[in-house]
Image 1 (cartoon, rainbow, N blue to C red):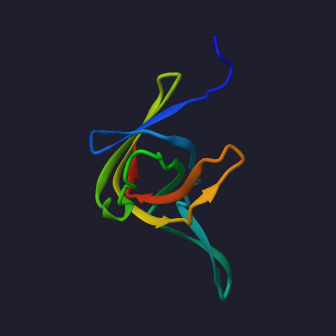
Image 2 (image 1 turned 60 degrees about the horizontal axis):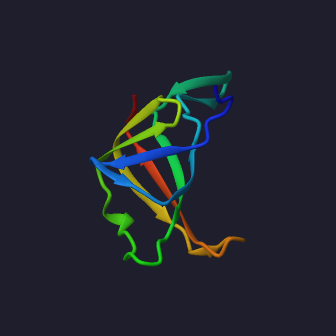
Length: 117
């Protein structure tokens, strides 16, 4: 039995995304502290989920047009069998290409989602 997760696969609107190097989710803020004349209070926020991934650009394939992803469904499956489903996903940003120590061209892509199951 493995102690740690070491792989994940991702599907965007049913299409499997290959060449992932790193997937990272972020924390979700549900409430925020606000300053009041009599002290502090708390307000509820509309939660949103953000995640990013490092995509290794394949040498033999054209680059993906990540900015066209709007209102998508993204399923992330971990090697242990657990999965997350993000709904209402849109691309926030596509970073500059970088070359890591293994001579791969890597692009960091950030997304935002309306919900996560």
